[in-house]
Length: 214
Image (cartoon, rainbow, N blue to C red; front, side, top):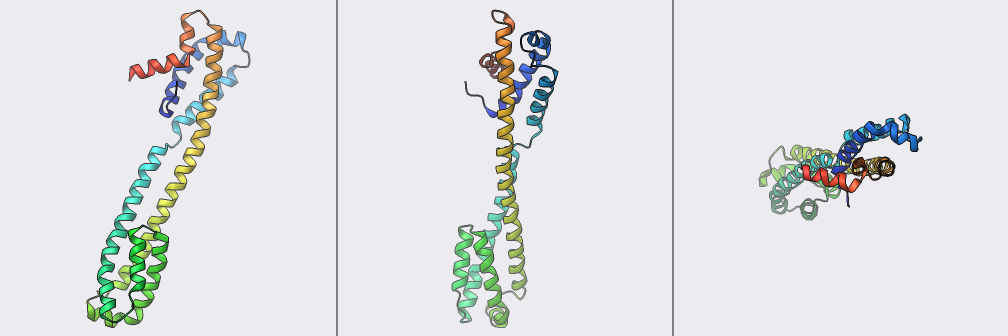
């Protein structure tokens, strides 16, 4: 039976209750499943309960990505007008076309580098561009977009790295916890073979009860 990730802590709680009740009887046959073993098992179970879940990280990443894409789209629309101002003023607007392409495809690193190139063209041509319709403060506006895009991109990368770390860290904890659960289950089934208590150490049956309760 395949165990879902969200079922591991519930499975651990179920078998912990039985193991706590039957600890003395199981230790008669398996002395290594002593108080130290039980303490470590409970610590692993608690660790998995408190570790940050990938779902939380994913939700935060989605928010950061949405904000990043929203700003890229808004800036792309603004640059459509700037491109016209460049053309009307007789200034080569090829860099703006390349910048707009990066924004459309959300190549943020490329866009940030090209924004700097556009800023360097605006500075000496500000008077002519303003005559064509560019806002007098557009240089500052574009600079703010550059800073904001860089910050949002950094935030998104942090979430991606965090999610990767959560998967790696929590994956190890899942495996470690399951080793304890499997060891307890194997011992309990053998100690209580032929008795009703054996069902409480049969992982398949525990999971079936858990799912039926939901």
